[in-house]
Each structure stands twice: as structure tokens, then as C-alpha cells.
Image (cartoon, rainbow, N blue to C red; front, side):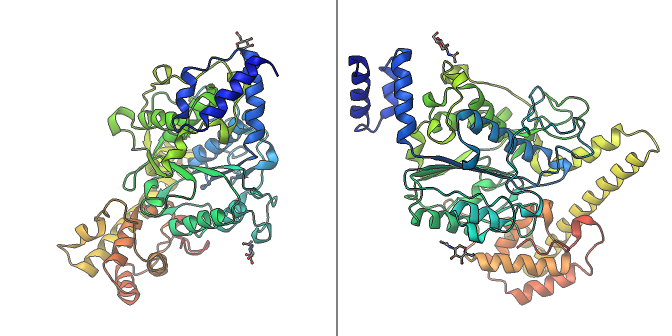
Length: 484
Ligand SMILES: *[C@@H]1O[C@H](CO)[C@@H](O)[C@H](O)[C@H]1NC(C)=O
Ligand SMILES: *[C@@H]1O[C@H](CO)[C@@H](O)[C@H](O)[C@H]1NC(C)=O
């Protein structure tokens, strides 16, 4: 062993006794030889890197979520993870969608290249379910229905990265299939995974509206889990690279290409040596970029769980692209892109609107776009009015607004009784039709109905009065079942 390498190892050994290990970068300057040695050593000592990537939506107007997931896959692949260790959930209706101007190609930024190529199709279409997602995390093959059967078959030295992107609401995350994913069930799965002793540490990146509500008051310390979310418990997250924004997608695209928090962490990971960047550094950068124009077009990135883990290098989870070896993270040279962005919940309307605007006068396409726009709008009005009316019936005209919209104290979960929340959702949907994608917005109101001690019978009465019938139209169809 050369004296140089010996010295490097010695420093590493000393370093592991210090808590502020990140400071080591300030004094170790390794010639390239030793750094290569270092790296291989590091690779062996981290066990296996696993990842679960999931886009919770379908439909061309939600292009961006699957684009995000494909892009994340490319980062992991270039980082050195093997396909057998990356489990991908995506509906897979985008690349060959008839609306897609570049058939067989998905991009995640206006100037980006294809991110679709090579993405494993582990769970697609109706295989993208809460049940399969949980089974994959837990490594339980027998609980999987359909798909490739790939699961996170991890051991105690392994590191796991989970990335979810979609619509959400307070306490809930969307799925292209019903039911949706509820926060309490996700936390139970993470606790179970921890109890199995099958990871060393786990990082969870979550893009969704009101994403903070998935962990706030729910994710305990001590599970060796570090989570960051695109938004706090009470606000929307944001789509970006949307038609009409700056930067905007190529003109032939009528849909958003990415999401603000997601492209922030991915475009940072694309260009840096991730051995030299900590999760915390990335969190700060993503937080600054996602705040976008001082929160006019942005949201508050949050962190939860074992925050101390964020001193670790991103490399432990995502690997690193050897082509970036010489590009070390420096806060001052990081992207300070300002862009306009679109509220996650309005991105579908934006798509229908641009489709309508561009279609030739009198064409089938113009009529179709108009119909889609009107259907989405009337579904929104129906849900907003129904919840409003139910609130008034239950709490009186004066109090309804306040009770329905009350925020929870910090570090308190959305609802005390999650089974109440789920049964209230089913009761509502029995009379009024499914909440579907847009209706996740009203989860806080329904949670507050539980928190106020309303019984299921009272809720059933109020729902039946508010909704005389379930409206026709694709968004109100109960064909997929209840969302809870
Ligand atoms: C795996 O899933 C099956 C089916 O849901 C269940 O019966 C079994 O207990 C699970 N195994 C573990 C180890 O959790
Ligand atoms: C990094 O820099 C070194 C020294 O200048 C050079 O030899 C090496 O090829 C560079 N690596 C990459 C991936 O560009």
C-alpha cells in the first residue's frame, strides 16, 4: 500500500469518529489515483443501492409525472445502479400517446433529450397500485399482483431511495388506479420495513400537493429515514416547463414537461459529482429553486424524519455519473433559474386549453378539447359546491368555512382517526361520485369533519342532501371504485 493511500485511509478512519465529517472535504485534496482507490473502497462498503420510482398519474395532461420518473431512472442508471435494483412504477401511456408530438420519446425539459429509453417496465397500467407499491418496498413477492415481480430485496447494509411524483392532497397521494395511497398506510409500511432490518438508511423524495401532510406528525425519528417534500402540509406543488411559461416547452407540446421540485433535484444531480454533495446541500438548493419568485409560483420544500442523515453524500443513494467526477457541488455556482410555473391542480386545464386554442376552427379536435375542458370544469364546480353544502349542513352557514378549512397545529397529523377519514370519503363518494384527481384538494375538509366528531350517519345524510345524483361524465364515474 502506498503511503499516500494509507494516509487517505487513515484520514477516513479518523473521520468516521467525527460527527462533522463533511468538513473533511476542506482538507483532503486527493490526487486522482488515490481518489479512484477511495471510490472503489466506498462502493464496496455501502452494500447495495435500491430504488423505487413511481408516477402516480396517467393521462397526457399529466405527462410531467412520468417524465420525472423516467429522468430519475436515467440518473440512477448513470450513477451505476443496476436495473435489477430499480423498481419502476409508471402507467406508460405517454410515449406512444396520440397527443405526443415525438412518438416513443419523453423529455423532462425544453432542451432535454429522451429519458424514456431503457426504463424498465416493472409495473405499468393497472399494475400501478398501492398494494404493489407497498409489496415492492417490503420486498414481499407473494403480495404482488402482475408486473415483473421485481421487489426491494434488500439487506441490513443497503441504502434505499424512494421517489414519488403525482397529485396529492392532505394525507393522500394519487394513483392511476383506485384506491389512493393514504399517509398512515405508507408510514406503517416504512415502520414494517424498518422492523425487518432490511436497510441501513432510506431517503424519500416526494413531489405532490400538500406533500408535507404525508409525514407531518406521522414519520417518527429513529427509523433511519430522511424525507423531503415539494410542499408543506397546506399548499400546492408546481408543474414547470408548461406551455406559455418561461422557459416553455417546444411549441408542439401542449403539456407541462416537469415539476418544479422534481426538476430541481434532478437537474442538480445530473451535473454534479454526487460523492461531493450532501443531501443537505441538495435540500438547500432545491428549497431555493422551488421557492420560485418568493413563493408566487412556488412552494416550501420541507424535510422530515432523521434530519441528521442529510449530512451523508447523495452518492450513497443515487451513485454518481463518472462523467461528472470533476464537477463538484458549489452553492454559488448552482442554478438560479427563475421560471414561471403552474399550480399542479390547474395543469390539466392548461393542457385542454392549449389543445383547444391551437386546434383548427370547426375541427373534431377543437370540439373534443372544448368538451374535455368543460367536463373538467363542471366536475370541479360539482365537488367544490358539494363539499361546501355538506359543510353548511353539518356546521351551519356561519361556521362551515372555518371548520372545513382549519389547519392542524404543527407536528399534529391531519386526522386523529384515519379509518374515519377513509370511511367518510367512501360515504361522500357513494352520493357524490369519486373525488378523483382534483377532489384530493378537499381531503382536509373531510379530515376536519372527522376531527369535529361527525358520525358516518350524519355524513351520509348530508351527502345525500347535497348530491341528488352523481353527475355523468368521466371524472365522476364510480367504475374504478372508491378512492379510499
Ligand atoms: C407477504 O404478503 C402475503 C400476502 O399478502 C402475506 O400473507 C405475508 O404475511 C407477507 N409476508 C411478509 C413477510 O410480510
Ligand atoms: C477530470 O480531471 C482530470 C485531471 O484534469 C482528467 O484527467 C480527467 O479525465 C477528468 N475526468 C473527467 C471525467 O472529465
